[in-house]
Image (cartoon, rainbow, N blue to C red):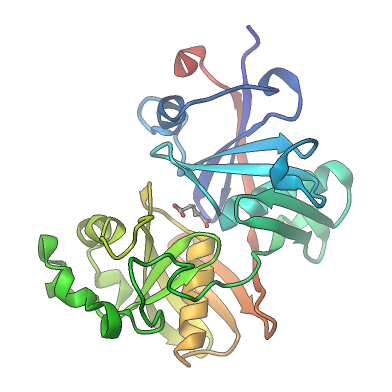
Length: 302
Ligand SMILES: N[C@@H](CCC[C@H](N)C(=O)O)C(=O)O
């Protein structure tokens, strides 16, 4: 059996194993959640935050209406999710490098996303993705019941229900909920560095207010139109960067009147630029990089 080739890529340190199933030995490869968990495991496998599959657009219902390829996203825990901003930039980079064009459309479970190359094109590795609309209704997050997504504490009494693991004693109150293809809850704090995300992330990710679980961001203002963000990702844990998290944090800051509509979001791995347009498109720009190419050890597929 031919070994399955993969690329190891990242956006600001948020890293991915990318397998292209459009051709070659990976074509038609079927993987279950257990295999994906093993490949993603940093001790047993290759190690990554997200496991990404690129599929042909032909005959794929997700690509209906026209897309250049389909991207499927799994968290390191094996679960399939709807969106990943940094991986969308990475896959956009690969597709544009193939065609030499400065634009490409990627079909995902969250919709069709347009990626484009900035400035010097793909050579510069700076890619912009239109992540689509921000979804702000409680049903779209989704939340477990009606709530004002701009002030969750007012309507959900989140602080009252966060008694588990001492969460209610922390600095985390009155978050904003945003869906940018996937669910996020954003807390504004005095100092994001001081928040114990290892302890607070798990009970928030699994809190009953979020029936599909949630990604968690803690954010403080650095200056005009510049925020610092740290993230606890659903299905992964703390990561160096989260593209959709940066979008959610920027939208939350804009909705709260803390910044203008273009925001620099400083993550552990570096900055992303986010613009929320007047017609509700969320644009994210930042770098991508390929770390190495390899082939999967067959034992990981057993
Ligand atoms: N790292 C990603 C987000 C990946 C998915 C997320 N953990 C979820 O479960 O929704 C990004 O760059 O957006």
